[in-house]
Structures are given as structure tokens and as C-alpha cells.
Image (cartoon, rainbow, N blue to C red; front, side):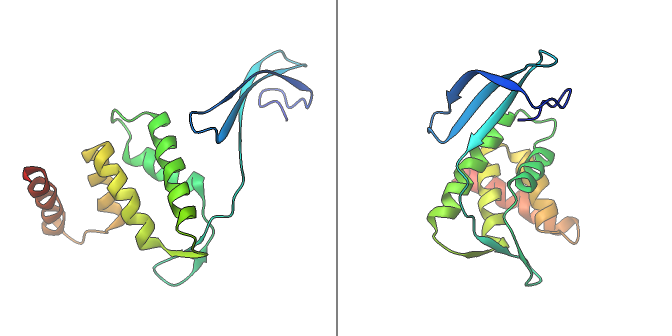
Length: 153
């Protein structure tokens, strides 16, 4: 493992821990050259389904892209990175459990919006406004009214 600070390849593991689900190993490492510590995460690599985009193109699953979209939606909101990572972990398991080789991007978008709705309503509205590409203010207001009506139930 290359040190992110000095680029040296020699380091040692000083601590290893598993997450709650026993699916990710967190390793604290110490660089033998500069003496700085850094963290690496080890997770089982599994085959994720291909995503079918709106225009019919196929695209490989990209966890980083999903996390970045969630971070942008949750910016300046009380949603921790731990919560985002946990959500994406669960999303990946759910997609794998579907057993499909390809999944329509609409299914993924709806799953992300459902998760965001329960995490933070403002983040949900931010994500929905980009994902659903509201054409005008009335479409945006209809989405907000739908959310408010859902709360009254």
C-alpha cells in the first residue's frame, strides 16, 4: 500500500477492525518512511449489475459516483458521511440481491430518492430536482405538495 503522504511503499498495519456487518475491514497503517498514519478499507469485490441509462447506454456501477451525488444533496445538512456510506452499502446489497445482470437507472434513482426521503427531506428535494429534471416551478411545487400530503397520513 502506497503512503498517501510521501508515496513510500513500506508500511505496517497497527490496527484492524471489522464494521458491524462484518463486510468491511478498516486498517490503520503506519508509513515506515515518514511515520504518518493513514486508513485503508478492504471490502469484498462483488459483481454489480450494469446500469441501463435513459438513452439506452450501459454503464458500470460506480459507487463513488453515487456517494458524490449523495454528498452534494446532503451538503450543509445534518447527514454524516457514515450514514451516507451505510446507505450506499445497503443499496449495493439490495442491488446484488435482485440477482439481475442489468438494472434500469430509474430503479436506482427511485431507491436513492426513497433513502434520501427518510434521511433528510431537504436533501431529498435537492436530489429529486436534479434527478427528475423539473421543467418549471409548478412541477417542483407538485413534488413538495406530494411530500407534505404524505406526512399527513
